[in-house]
Length: 86
Image 1 (cartoon, helix red, strand yellow):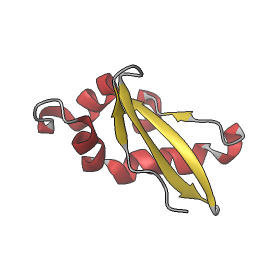
Image 2 (cartoon, rainbow, N blue to C red):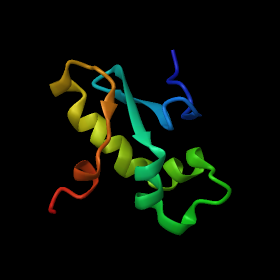
Image 3 (spheres, rainbow, N blue to C red):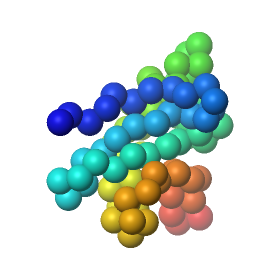
Image 4 (cartoon, helix red, strand yellow):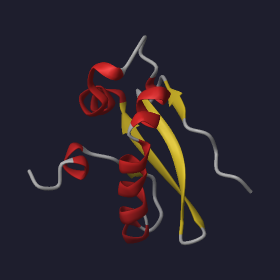
């Protein structure tokens, strides 16, 4: 079964997405506020899915790293995940 396509959730105020990790689906979430900061001026007309796709590899790698350690619960990507050296 293929993973779901990323989508913007108005109520959650962020983008939900899935990543395959060790043959399992892992769900991730990144807020619009964090996407604005991480993707910067590249966001046009609040196209949050496009902003996610701009940095998808980096965001997905956070979920791939954290999901197994967090019992496969939805991984909420944080600013610290995206700036591990700071």
